[in-house]
Amino acid sequence: MEDRRIPERAAEPPRATVLAVSVIAAFLAPFMSSAMNIALPSIGRELRLDAVILGWTATVYLLSSALFLLPFGKIADIRGRNKVFLYGAIINTAASALCAAAGTVGVLMAGRILQGLGGAMVFSTGVAMLTSAYPAGERGRVLGLNVAFTYIGLSLGPVLGGVLTQNFGWRSIFLANAAVSLILVLATAWKLGGEWCERRAESLDGPGALLQGFALVSLMLGLSRLPRLSGGLMIAAAAAGMAAFIAREKRARHPLIDLNHFRSNSVFAFSNLAALINYSATSAAGFLLSLYLQYIKGLTPQKAGFILLAQPAMMAIFSPLAGRLSDRIEPRYLASAGMGISASGLFLLSFVGPVTGLPFIVGSLFILGFGFALFSSPNTNAVMSSVEKKDFGLASAVLSTMRLTGQMLSMGTAVLLFSLMIGRARITPDVYSQFLRSARVGFVLFAVLCVAGVFASLARGHLRKA
Image (cartoon, rainbow, N blue to C red; front, side, top):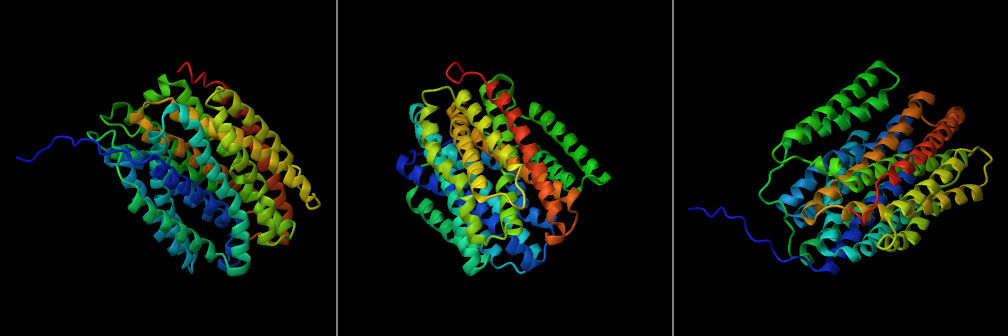
């Protein structure tokens, strides 16, 4: 008779190896995202894309990642986090090569969707692996280091992206990403032994995953179609889909996400809400400023990249410090202060115009970057430390879903403003005034959203008591 007993868990992977592959993965996605922002004007010129489609080349990756994060977070807890991580890195490598070879916008979009799928598999497992490998008293330090590599990726993205785009064309960015992804694949396959499978006896809630995906796709398509009636109908369909998803999760035997985490764990619930608000308010800043610096200020991709370096450089410098502080100081205070500082940086950027000096922009980015660093590491520590070890994969996936959904909503807001104020037109000198107006309105909306996020951050309560 076949032995159906649940196998014993394999030995856990070595900490140093887990940390190495996690920080490489943390570097890759933001590097690609920020480098892509610099390359967008060049992509738009070569493929002759209007402002809305140009925004979608960045947004479709975020949408694809957000669709698959929760399902793969659950699959990782069932089948093995290291295994899902490895397959995600393989898909990301192949998808990056496809994007580099794209000759039409359709092929480029397909490659970006596959990149999002691979990214979701990596995002949903990287932080969970790291949290599983290190005890509670050391998590703030290693999570801070992980976040620091995220911001190193954001820092090098504009600089290297600008250099590569200016000297070798925008396709070289995707080739560079494929090369580093291949290194990650080899390191994971050869060096990362052991495994974590905390929920072997459970199964994936397929209907719940479909409902969640339907809601996210309907929301983003609806935002891009406003103020047309079809846009409003799609947003209503998104709300209905999310309501159906919640109802499904309440009665599912093995739900995609246990809603009790949100009902009974205020630290988990409000920390994730704060992450959603923070990323919704800050993520499109680099996208808008990249277009502003290259179109309005006339800078080359390389020079624009050096200007945009200011924000992620501050994140990389201060994130490890904020992470260590969150092991001793309540994360709610550090994260809330960071959210307030970010709001001030965004408000300053709402004053940009044709004659705005570059020192003003760099100073505003310094403020925004410092605020984000003060928020992100402590908030991540709060989320991951508020759940039991068996839920690390789920918690990591939920937090990544909040981050990517926030980034998606931020980009969706920018695309909506372009649609309302520029229309389906390419960004040329004839529409520069409309572009500037949409960027300023966007920065004001994002600053207000950040202020609201301060209250969500404070409402989480105390982690130590939890």
